[in-house]
Length: 539
Image: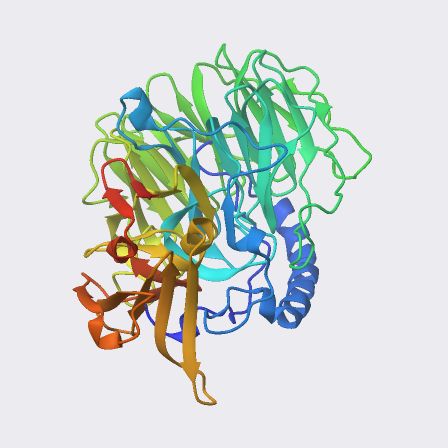
């Protein structure tokens, strides 16, 4: 929810396990073998996380009236890094409307790729799943946050525990999440796409070969990303070429070749061991897509029929009454997209309902998150439904128990440009029905303005806020949809001009936010272009 309450800004909820979800939308990777290992490792990780989280409360998203120990770099970044890609080209620069081109659901969070090459995420960030900061955590966000340092991205993949990877247009690779901000993966220069599993990650190269490496462990709060970490050791999967898609089911790897055949191998179970050589699975031909469901392999053939192949190699028809063009699954349920663009779900679905998903049409892709489901329409709109405890569906929950039963449209992430430079904040711009709210401390820092929270009494109740820039000062009180602006040279406060606002100052996921219109009171040129998802702030 979008509330002005202290309880919504400080992370106090106990984190859950470093999850078990497979990469969605592309490939899946859950199996009983995997779950057995995760049950053991998760208990250890959860204990460590709780110990560290409890001892590092000041590094969490703090109420803005309270001093926070996080650095200015964590709070606001005008994109810069020694390894930072070039400044992104927006879709408006090339005459194309902004929209999403890929979406993937993880364990309580969502990652989406936009057609301008930027990557956005929303949902839970208790374990650093979103990859926006080394130290700051907050409970949830339905407003998309731009992943820092990523531009010109062409493909994404994620796994339930929060580890994500992306391919840049030049074939290089980036990783983030699981407590880390983005960093380049050295040694990869010709990637096409990835499959992130619970233990390993697969990269498919332009020449159709496949390599794998072991996933990094969860990084606990307090360890900066600059701290040296082991570089991934890549192993080529022998016997593979002309591969067009990959999948992971625990430590079982699968590859679909251009000729419609399916191949399999075993990923390394020990640190110093290597994957086995891939072998073709007999009896499978004319396959166009593969994924997994409860340890079984789901296969889509060239005629639009889905087949289910169990661990013993037995193949059975799966809902042949439907002609399917896309599918996705996890250990609980299956999503099917028909050639007409309708969506069907079966199994232990996110809402408990079987069959056709109402209110969806013209769908091109689907993604089976662990507790929430996602669909991408042909015109680039993301729809979410199911579990929404952390707003991972893309909007606040619409039903009791943190649920969304009728798909809701996710927001298009909004960029903020301050004096011509892209502001990279760990807090999103929040698109509401009245206006768009901006994280004012980060905006003020980028402007060179001064924002202050004024409190009184032992309880530290906020009396008012002030924003100073050049010779102007704005004063606004909590819950009031108006502010006073005056010159710093004016002594008499009665001379201040009272200006109405469409909404009051507020708080969201730990940040104080203000309607963008308030910045006009500083004499700035401020514009919000909803169609191009951009706020510009200039002199």
